[in-house]
Length: 320
Image (cartoon, rainbow, N blue to C red; front, side, top):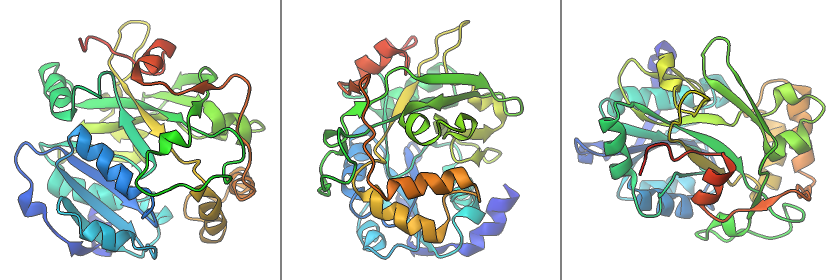
């Protein structure tokens, strides 16, 4: 929280519509850079789910992202050119906005390539979900990242802005996942999926983390630690099913592997803002610049939320 207070000075307001936030509003938070192609569908998806107001931080975009967001009637926008990595990958900036505007609101924090789904999300929207969570006495909601990919090289087909990215990324790994309990933060630490299989087979301990807590009934003493993988206080991590009880959870459909990732990875090799000085992550971004084929024979084609429940990748719990 101290870091967020200190880093607030790095943010400059571009468009402030926070006066329009109502008492019951569900808020969306995201830090973005050069996401003009993704944002039209991203906004459509989350508006449809029931997000009332979006608070964005734009980190030095030069593709029209900031202009697009500033023109949206339900968006408040801040800009900064400071280091994404040194802001804990944007969490210090978002932490300040959550501290200032998020208290007593249900707050959804996601990346531009993440699409939240949950059981019955197509018919029961976020206001109904958050009301149910309130009735259950729950202040947080977990989701596992399900990473989607195409069949064939990832750069073969060009994504058209505004279209559903899942149509271009219809496949996912159905079963190669593992989990353990984090010794400090006491959260379920999930790894596996396509990035683990293709890029981190030689050092699986460094594979990306898939567990997240993206939806929280915010209080001013809350703070994310590492992206939305970890949050304090630690009791907010009680969001996944265990052998003792079945807890409703969702999934974040991760649409990272559109053709857009090829150029982004080339840029990241120069900027080095998305990873620490790790040779494994340097090799990962180098591999993405070559438009790899992520397909394998055991892949499943995404069919909807019920499929993920049946596979055990999310849970319906007592959400009837």
